[in-house]
Amino acid sequence: MLKALGVGAFWPVPVETAPEEVQAPAVVEPPIPVLEQAPAQVPRVAPAARVPVPLKTPTPAPTAAHVQAPRPQPSNLDWPALTQAIQACQACGLCGQRKQAVVGAGHVQARWMLVGEAPGEQEDIHGEPFVGRAGQLLDRMLQASGLTRADAPPEQQVYIANVIKCRPPGNRNPTPEEVLQCEPYLVRQVQLVQPRLIVAMGRFAAQALLKSSEPIGKLRGRIHDFEGTPVVVTYHPAYLLRNPADKALAWDDWCLAKSWMTKR
Ligand code: SF4
Image 1 (tube, rainbow, N blue to C red):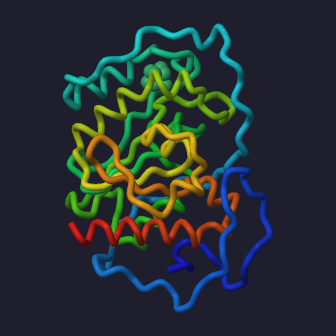
Image 2 (cartoon, rainbow, N blue to C red):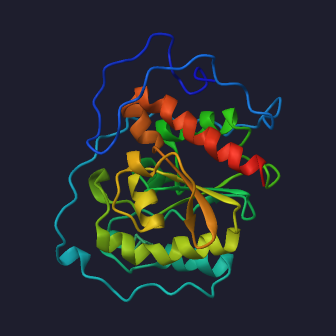
């Protein structure tokens, strides 16, 4: 299972660690078992071209580019209208620099909903969340959990969305103002999908959904709530590419999520 996540036989590898994250413990034997619902052959999405995962640049102070329009009000929109609204949205300064807004992807009645941070360069080009190396790692984690983003029944196919729908330039972190402006779209997506579980990947997704300022290391390991839907917090795949020692912790999170779902 660790091999599926790209964890090598040698351990640990000294790596750079984000300030808010925690260090991984030593790997515990025995190896993580294959989960019961994993199909023999899980369909996989064709891997996207390998691209580097750039490091984050600092979040800038609000400027004239962040002057905000009224907050979007999508609470009555159906899927086609919501998609159209997001693609045409100009509610924050990110609209001026995107190639396209990235709405989301997957089964619109999925049991599992995954929430990430924001589109990167490749997502902005392709109009799809989680392409590139982070997307490939996510696909391996999904496969190891018996899930997929390729066409499949709603028990297996996930729905993936980001907190922010337009790419922050230079791969910088989104500003609080941008998160606030874009959040109604994510709320509406959750209302439409009605997932049984949300997996919040990364600090921005977790803090935005849970209205928390706690670091991700303190939010992991328990079940939270977002408007009646259980939430499990884990690391963002791009973070795991920079900090592979924490893949074991991420797998613990996926096991918690899987365990919660099998009890429902
Ligand atoms: S990031 Fe969200 S709020 Fe800002 S322009 Fe894009 S869709 Fe609208």
